Image (tube, rainbow, N blue to C red; front, side, top):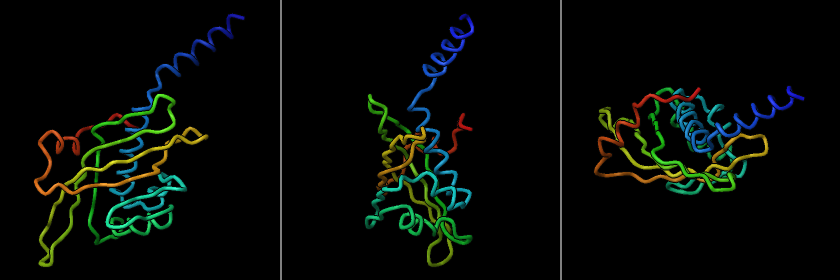
Length: 161
């Protein structure tokens, strides 16, 4: 009987230690790292099958979204990276919102490097398999650029696996 009590205590402790906001934060960072490493197949694993991404036009579903983002995985294409600043999870643990800063690096007509910054807003849905996947995503460009604090997020170390 003592063995069962120890096992139950271990399970309760593990559940209490799990923080959904930290899980989503790490998923968001992993999502960015999939594009930073130009791995479109890894990128797709972060997408909800019914995902909707809104930028210059809506993109629906994994294949259409991946096609729109494939320019970031092209060898000579632009790069993008992002990090969350805020993560909020609904009380029932089913949805989360992640908001943060992104940096896009490309080249102008003359081949000079260009950088643009903005914010992103990702809605994550928790699936039955325990994995958070992006269901909605949108972003805004900041003509004035990020603050030093927001810029520091992009280079901050993370404690995600």
